[in-house]
Length: 371
Image (cartoon, rainbow, N blue to C red; front, side):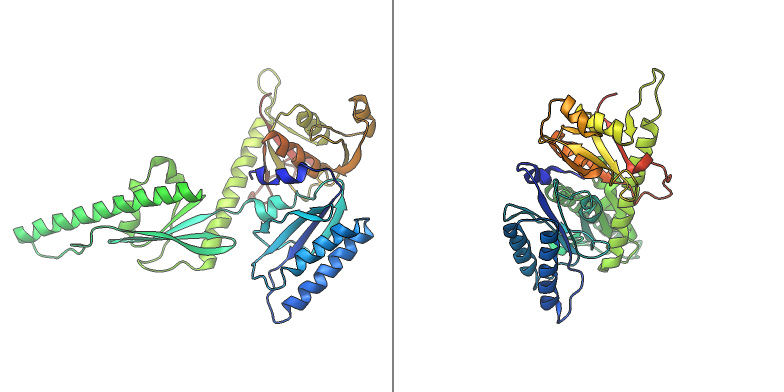
């Protein structure tokens, strides 16, 4: 997950209100239920010590969602009477609505709720061209079309010389149209930043387009087992997106497991456990943070200073480093703050299939920029 969008949360000091709202239920009573949710979340924040202005800002923001058709949910991060960031979620928050008032924004859940949300371009391919559709957790939208040569597109069964000449022209039209579709699909992928390209259509049409795509896009392609002209159901796309998430989590976890083994000189390219991660964060060495949210270290309390690289296992360690002001914070949120400041990525490895239960140890690990 690219964490750059979280920068606004660390440009101002805390404490912060962090609220996760479930918007997946839509009934006639939804506006009334959202109003009750808004009041409940504001009361919960107030009971934890949040100021009245921030509670009011959160309450108003949730009430504004009373007519929203968002399919999953929304996260709200507020301080000083203002909602600073409110990203949509790619899946509903587990356990329903929740609110927290703390020194740092409660951002670690975003790695699962909003982080791995692959964007797909679905290409409905036939011999005349293709229609493109953009799919994500937030729905679908048209993404353009390409029309190739229109005549001739059908072959005949005759062995006559003139018919064989006609067949050759048909082949030329098919090949030309496949190249046109592949070029347009490559442009669409570049413009949308799509993680997956799903080809739908006849076997030959799909394969012809696949073969003509730039080589660097081949690993992004999935061919759907549907006939020409069919439209993919939401569950078909969701299954493809979920499989992509599992493959990515598994690949990164495998890379981590290989990197944590020391080389011939006793140096490792990965670390795990809170003390080692804190040291790596202070030295700006984290390249990618791996988090297993149910790990015991994820909610372990550490100490932070005003700057993202001011963090320590013990409060006295910060004083030794010259930091006079310090606050307790969850280890996962403190490490995400450090990752944002240094341009590192972060990933939840919960989706990794058949992952070792102890990887990373305690639920927190990192691939390093240098050993």
